[in-house]
Amino acid sequence: FAALGLDNSWDFKAFKKGFKIDIKELSDEQVVFDMLGLDPPLVNAFRRILIAEVPTVAISRVTIHQNTSVIHDENLAHRLGLVPIKFEPDLLKCRKDDKADFTEQDSVSFVLQAKCPQGQKKLSVYSKDLRWLPLTEQQEEALKASPPRPVDDEILLAQLAPGQEIECVCSCEKSIGKEHAKWSPVCTAFYKLHPVIRLEKEILNEDAEELKRCCPMGVFDVEDVPQGKRAVVVNERNCSTCRECLESFNGQEKGVMLGKAKNHFIFSIESVGQIPAPLLFERALSKFQEKCQSARESVRTNRKRQET
Image (cartoon, rainbow, N blue to C red):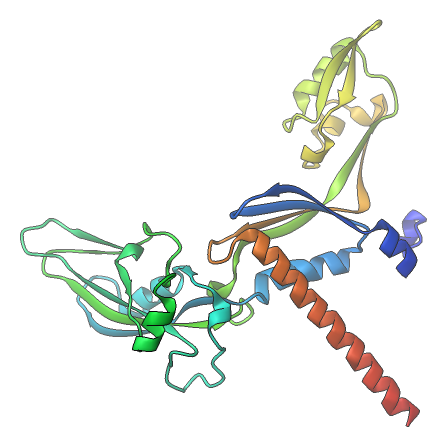
């Protein structure tokens, strides 16, 4: 920022005045929003929290009683572990000891039983074949209104030939993506700087049409003016910085200025499906707040030690 002649020093009053979140798209699958007034390290911290520190529930242990398919036991267990599970993680406690038994307080279980009968060409085993196995009557009663289930029923797990079978029990627990990617709640969580595109000179007629054609993202359009036709910027948000407008069109000489807004970020959150994307946004913000409070308490503690 210093090389660009910009003052990047922290100013709380300026942050409070300039910080803004503008929601552009909102659904259970995806949230797209503009985040203004933040520095890249803070925005990246929010992205990392979404990927690695928002808890979900996933299969962590597979007890295989029978597997005569062509898939090795460890490969089958790995495939099962990557099946996203739709279940509220706040209903479970985190397991503190990996060697301890699974209990109703810290886990839910599924059973998978499939066998291809003789005379049938093959049998496809899907995630929908995972059946919830309540650990106790109390757990069955507590979760019967919204039982755990796979996010998608059509995830192919294995294919069985006649006579082959699979029988196993899958135990799920609560954890975070920092421990393993199967607990990460997002398909993608990314941001980019908002493009800034200016036409320093008027681009008219054939040049205007050529500029519109060369941009694959539809950033430019042509409007009618008394001089004929003139190029205008209509959707700079879609710019992917492919630089076709500068290289194919020779836009730098003709007045096309391409840049980025240094404190305006386009952020996208796409949920795997365990937790709706808007709720992921809220939980990541809460986790961010916890980290800030923890950092503040750490600073206060160190100051007290130095004073004494």
